[in-house]
Image (cartoon, rainbow, N blue to C red; front, side, top):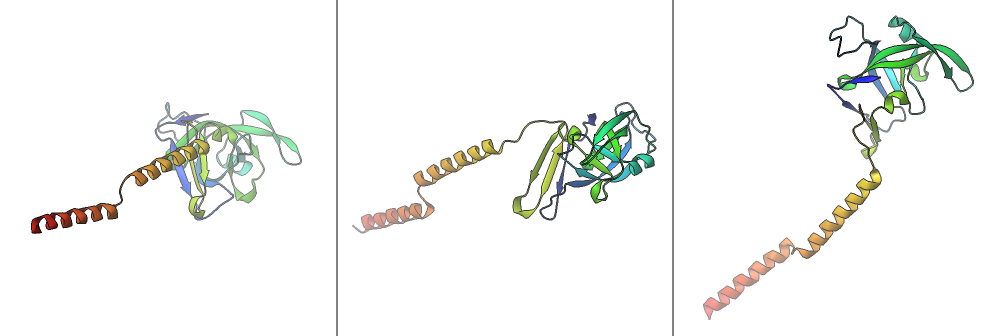
Length: 197
């Protein structure tokens, strides 16, 4: 599994809080973009769901049929109540903002709940950085590939606390605008008194 590093990241903002992370993506037969600039392969639009609980990405039989994929091997797929031996394919996944991940191994499944065509599992997610936030009552998901560094909210919180302490000390040690104005007025009055005397 590799990436086209001409574009590395994308962000999806949702209208409110969501418990389903989904994107419209493109899927094609596998090819190496560094070797094939304009391959004559159809890229089919698909609805994808992100699933951190899935170890591998998956494609529905219907989408695999549309793409005319040829299996490269068999994979045992474990479901909630059963397991089955399924055809496995190599595909290219076109994420939003032209983020391309090619040669993704994907077993097929009969269907995905919610009407999705493709499931993005931890095989893809763990190769990059995924962050999810819910500030202002709106879910925002951001993904970049490959991984460039981690996010540590504890470290961020400590830095913010230290910054606020410094600002608080500066504000206490510096005279306020009102105090400075009063000082100027006092000096003016003193000068006027001296002139009168």
